[in-house]
Image (spheres, rainbow, N blue to C red):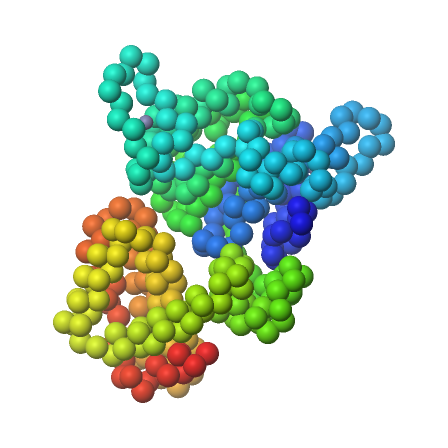
Length: 352
Ligand SMILES: [Zn+2]
Ligand SMILES: [Zn+2]
């Protein structure tokens, strides 16, 4: 444990991060843009290690050739790997780094906030103005970056333009289109794609996962190593997913009144368990992707319908991330789904 082997796939991105970390000065703002569970957080962590690993610090020693990957053993590598390094900080929705305006009284605490607020950005700017506690570079991970309010994003902008020399920002976003153009333009943008199933399978086996479980988990994860790791650790979740796919087939075959009942259920669950809703949207994508593959050659209207459905799922996700009313997001998605017969590829979708 504790080396770059933690990241599954993404060899080209790892090479790029190495080169960005070796620049003098290193790239000070990186945007990792891509779907959830693809390894974006681990890549951010890898960048933090590349910048701070003691085995890579040769200073100006002539002939010093830093090892290409972080050692995984030194104090900085270990603390970063444990998520416990005092100089790697996370700017995320909630209370972290909150710093009320001076003189502002009665600033309410906001542990359940869904946004990254201006008060948190203020705290971040104050923090990065000081030297790191012990590492050469302080790394601020902004995740998910699209949750910054416009005020917060505009406040961060100045610091992204002229950051203190010992600070680096890594923005993570599944919806980079929702970021301010001015923010994106200050970042080195790296698109994090999904990972081939065979690569994920090999990565799981390398982590000691049993071969047949690795195969099932990699196949179910649709290119997302993070999901595959979860499936390998909790194989029950794959059964849940199969049941979800069967349910998708039933709802795709149902009329509007049943679809609206389902929309109501999604809304109720959205209040308490957002993660399960995003997993369900992923399952819907899997369902319509399979429908698309099954119909692509033979049945043009069905293919067009499946494509429209995929767009509708993507739009619903964007709406939910942008705090559009959940009712609007779910209803619009379900109305946009074409109606399928239960025997129409529904079983094929369930079988795989
Ligand atoms: Zn190290
Ligand atoms: Zn605050």
